Image 1 (cartoon, rainbow, N blue to C red):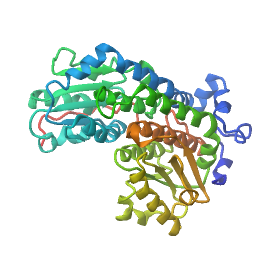
Image 2 (cartoon, rainbow, N blue to C red):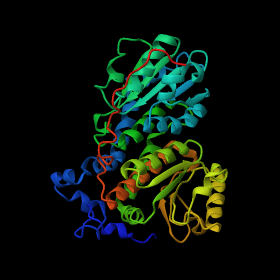
Image 3 (tube, rainbow, N blue to C red):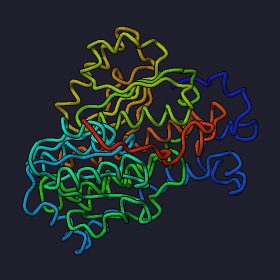
Image 4 (tube, rainbow, N blue to C red):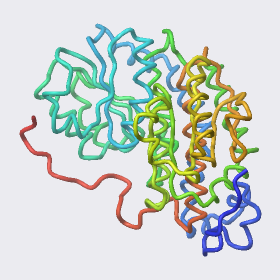
Length: 410
């Protein structure tokens, strides 16, 4: 297990009265006003509500009128599907694309909202298709800018908006256009914290609604299994995550394969955002790490390995982790998966056991991957004296500030 770091000596929320008891109950037991003053009330609540909100999103997807709307956007079948969003929402698209492509039997790719806004003519696939816009607030400049531009300049494309905000522009501005279908999630998923947590995982789960009745569908039993597993992590493994977060690492590498590269990027972003850049982060595939990025690793670089539920893929991942051990790189280590061999974890490694069989697909595993990464970043932020609800001290805002949408694009 990773030892405690001297940076806990700094004044932070983990003061002398609480630093020896890092269980979530200690943080939750404070009056709400104190939690708000310490800057963690919203983020902590929104991380912990995820298993419950996933059940709510799954129920929403099973409603007959919702199933009918989602089926309608695929009838007639589009030639291709593009997932778009900005920041975390883009990473949701990266997580979803492989599962949607396999289940729909259509080409599916994720393209960042900013790239579509500036280069849509060269990056949008030719011919008609379905554009899926993923957004927490639906009020960022790129969100509506992309949809408006494509409705005018690529009229053969249909649109599906999945958002957490019923009052956002994405949810309200196009309600009279028959080419746009909107799915709004429960208001609780519209995170108040600057960082996206429950909004990320619920938007990810909601995107699988297109697979209802198809291969890759996240069944009620599978979703319940994932929710229960993450709840177990919250109840029994947060002390270990907190101790790992107190380590003296100044850099963290997040590894994922397939769609989990999107989860790795999201984990890296959560750590970067919540520490205000005090921890440098990188995300890469397990196999891609050998092609240059490994040169940046040090012995004290934290390695976060989001392990595939597919045993064949996981064999490649284990080989890479063993190679890091032989080279003395990334000794502090967090591995999220099940049945991890001791030599893969290493002497300073922490394994968060999350059952995720290959038969259940990538998405349930990624829900757990992201939730664990959120907790790690949350505790690292607190250990550095930060405020998870608004860690960047005015540099970032919850919704990206408005900027000019220029009339001509490449």
